[in-house]
Image 1 (cartoon, helix red, strand yellow):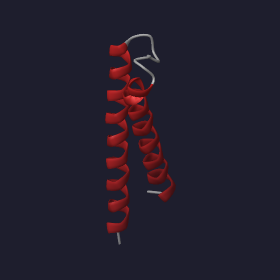
Image 2 (tube, rainbow, N blue to C red):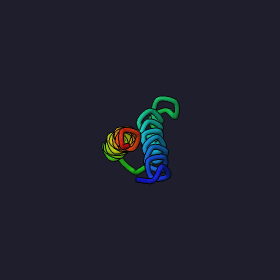
Image 3 (cartoon, rainbow, N blue to C red):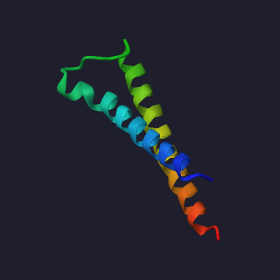
Image 4 (tube, rainbow, N blue to C red):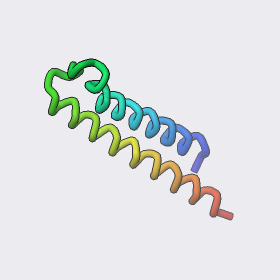
Length: 71
């Protein structure tokens, strides 16, 4: 497996997690404003992006570990 693939997956995971955190905590400093039109949609968007980002990071790290373990 190429090293570029795990790096791209890692970066994408970190970016997705960051976007999810931003959308999730944005109402704290913008006085309850929303991005997507509804509060529940913002929270669902944030949860999905943070979950998917965490899964991407975990997958990238396990791919890297598997690549290093190969002879």
